[in-house]
Amino acid sequence: MNDYLAILPTPLPVADALAFVSSPAAGGIAVFLGATREQIGENGKSLLALHYEAYTDMAAKQLKTLAAEARGKWPILKLAILHRTGRVNLTEPSVLIAVSTPHRAEAFESCRWIMDTLKHSAAIWKQEIWSDGQATWVHPDKPD
Image (cartoon, rainbow, N blue to C red; front, side):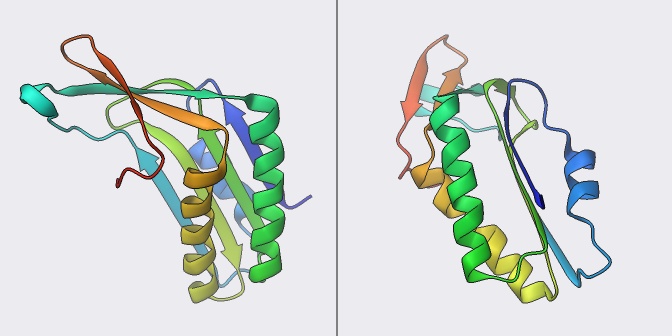
């Protein structure tokens, strides 16, 4: 199988994913790492971390469907879709998309499409954890 799909409660194995998608036939490898970024919210609160929850069985099936749809649109050689659950502190990656294709344009296009589609379709939910101890759920349509 040329897909590495996982929902993990531990830090994402970035180097393993990059090694997985490498291929002698790949002219392009596109990688997206979504990381928790520092931000100031309402009333001057600082973001400390994100917390992700998933309906793991459903989300795993959705990742398989997403990979199959992407393969129907682009000549993907190998792909990795990894998503973290639990607490993700500042600078840590919560999602990794890596795609290898024969040409760079296809790698960029497919990587972006997978990320955008994943955000709106997977049974994975995000909470923002603030410096005042409050936690707020994030709607999937909220801009990043």
